Length: 191
Image (cartoon, rainbow, N blue to C red; front, side, top):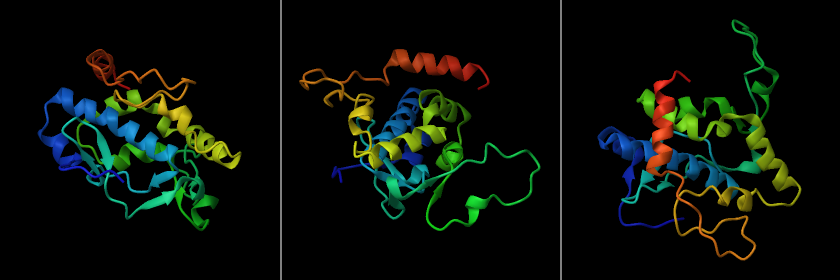
């Protein structure tokens, strides 16, 4: 758990922040989700009200009432279903927590279409079954949950890269103005 003086609820921050800071916060939200998954922490409720923003635009999960171990979650999809198909899928009746990665974006409950596009452009793999099952399979093989794999994607300076054997290189800040310009360019296209 991270203790900090002040965190602004992410949904409040997104409504009042300038566009560039709101976009950076959305990108950092994806990194927060990745880092939690790397630690075998899965938040069933992706609503932005469950996350807080520090003054340095770091995102933290601070509502722990819907947290599960990632290895206990069943990852499923509705993408193989046809439009208009009305029968209930077999996995619907399975006991335990079921997660549909393609519904992360809707679960965030972000009003701004541009902010959702920035999130999707930066973290499209979070919305795939393969990503989440890969983390779970790594944990089952005893490789942990992929923390060293994911740590090289951490967005802030001061975190060490997972692929550096000597731990001497620092991670590059991914949510840079240059990255944000690329994400905005994607915004102009209909994704």
